[in-house]
Image (tube, rainbow, N blue to C red; front, top):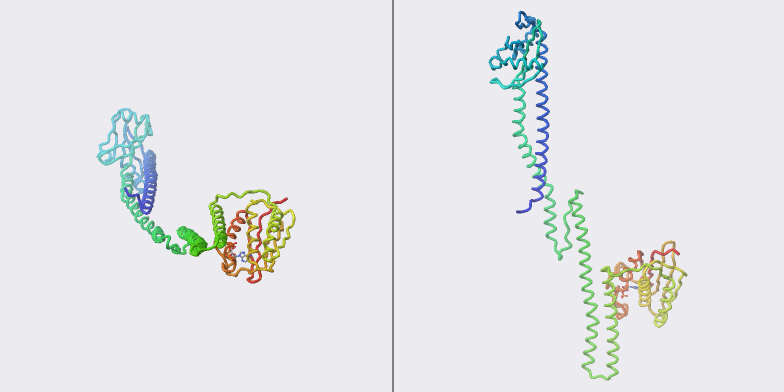
Length: 468
Ligand code: ADP
């Protein structure tokens, strides 16, 4: 069986709710109405009986109604009250007087009934007659040393007619109410779900190759608009991620192809020429450099891949960043000196933080390495460690070639090199700063860069410090 659509479900739900409500109200109203009418009739019969008792006299054992026949009020009351009227003598059970209506209806008690009703007086009974249902009040009336049974009644027909016409009205009112509710909710559900269908169609049109597409936002600020905006947000993130992935794949292929082409070229040239073992040695030495670069790149890529897939655990141990920066600077000093640079450091003592010493070392190394790499002979590189109330602060400053302003937002991206021709290509592949950024983020810190092309760059890393 095909599953029900949301529209059908909503319509069914509304229709069932409306029919339950209507039937419930009708049921309650039916009971209130019939109980009210029943009570009114009982009261009316009771009033008639007590009224008639006031006029009833017995003369020589015969009932007489003693009223003023000139008083239209009394005449009208007597006429109504005696419509269903009988008087019995209790002792013998004889019917002494009765109205035409009761005679026509063929109502006559047996002496046993008369005695019983008199005992239970005042006693109501409902009886079925050819003239319809009647409610009779039987009341014993003592008079002239004897006792009589006064029977006064009222027709239950008007009450039953009213209740029946109410039920008849319900028979078509409830179904038509439910039908109306079903039609209205079918249209309303259709109208409300229209945007959902539009969203579904728009979402269906979006493929990986067309991630720049967005779902329509109608500006109504409702749940569906919110859904569309959220979905658009997801699409934007997806588009960015897929874009990065594409760029990453392209960069990797490019980065691998270049050194491989160099290796292959060198090998081909060496093989074509019959060379001396010295020349072979030179070719192999140069190839070793390319191999080293490839190994470095693949290692960095592996670290980055592991880091990004969440496999790398960051330790939380006290790291003496000032001592660490000083030792790195001391190690790199000869490298800087060989390029004709002066490397200076100024490390305030005892700056520590809570983190992973391996990653902190990588951060310092990469930044100082870059500073040396992008500064030409005669330049200066400064390494400074300090701390404020919250953070350990590492500052690496150089007066080298600087970074073009439009490149600054990209330098932390994987494989991004501001101008690969400016540096010695064998030295890097544009992964160092993405590792720095990842590690700083993992430590809850921040990294900022300021740079003026031609005048140098300044990297400032802030990492929450451990109090000591
Ligand atoms: P790599 O150094 O391997 O090229 P990085 O990710 O470490 O890659 O750096 C990315 C780019 O940022 C570099 O290619 C360079 O253009 C720029 N850059 C980084 N540090 C400096 C610096 N101190 N001075 C000038 N440019 C820099």
